Length: 581
Image (cartoon, rainbow, N blue to C red; front, top):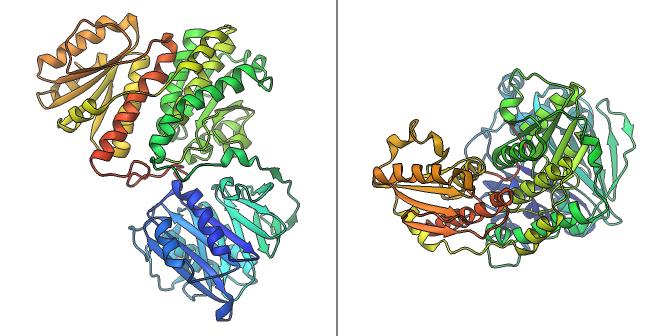
């Protein structure tokens, strides 16, 4: 889940790579660093790194260093604690090579024992770069031979002392390259090229690249030169205003109405829609994802069952890929990922693809690994999402999947969707709500049907950024264990947006109150019951309410996080794009 960036060209590439790393910081922010060729010191290889974010690295290098050949890294720790020794770039044992690496070397212990050299860090990456140094041949041949011995995933950039080249290798983790008249850049995400390049190249698994001044050569796994087609970059899709005083998370919560309108316009008004007839043949649907995207899968199942009467199933990707799945050619397998680079989701998609079955992916970016695997792509239109805790990407996923279900069912409710997209907003006062959470020892979220899914997502948001040990449950399961935890220090957040379960949720509320627990009710329905606080939701059609009801829970998580003094954009131990298993 790290991010790598490299630059080679005229001028000071250090600041270009720093800017690229800022675009990649959502992938990890434990530590960061640069390796570069210092032309003022006999082309010696130099390294600068630090614990913390890119701003700390920028201060360290500003006006002190200059180089035309640079590789950089922002880290989410997988092997070894967070410290400067474990930060990337990592040097080979002989000091001749520096590497930045995104991925995991699964057999690093075995490789470490086989090369018998001293190690200064706890990382699998240092083993990788020392393995390269121990091989025979040219630098490119050393890299290629080492990659053949590595088990696991990697995208990497390699720099050699006194060299005028950067070497790239890719397997499993994403890696892009872009060229213009002045420079070549490489990065884990196409966003590093924003507003600088018109076209980019995507490396496939097993491929390599050799970067020199204004030029890049690609190779296959056997070291044979290959030609690659470039992909035009739509820079508008990657622009982002970093100058706002708001945190990214709050900014993205506020942007949800815009994301909903864009989704409506692109999927309901634009003529560039995919043909819904392609999906009529499928008798069932299986949705696979991780984290927040999994919750959107659960919601999609409800939509397709409600409107299309189609059997549906949702699986967590990390479980699906190791389960004894009964796969069917009559089933469409739908993979959902904001980034399109989630490792477990990609591995599950490859499993289905290898079985010769049909795949649709739902992603928020135009170019990603999932899209390249899919037979069909259902885009979301949330725009770039920076904060680790997903907000606008989640609601855009739900809305896109809802529109897909409605179209598949042949329902023409365009006026309802248009009215919603024009009137949905994110204005809720959660100040008292926040205080109730902070006064409670235990926090639970509960709901029924679609509201149960919202309770799961609401609990996840509070865990992710406020670090509270909370639980989301189906309200009907309250009596099957959770009620034993309820006392006068407990707060239960009840979501109620469905008339058919109104009486049932009221019964669950009374059960909590009988044990001394406090209730916050989030609803657009009139409930004749006393609670500690009610947050009233605007009224839309029932199937649209999951998009509305999650917003106060997002705002709650943000508010609690801030009052506890945490960073809502960069929660500890987490990263935005989970590109390792």
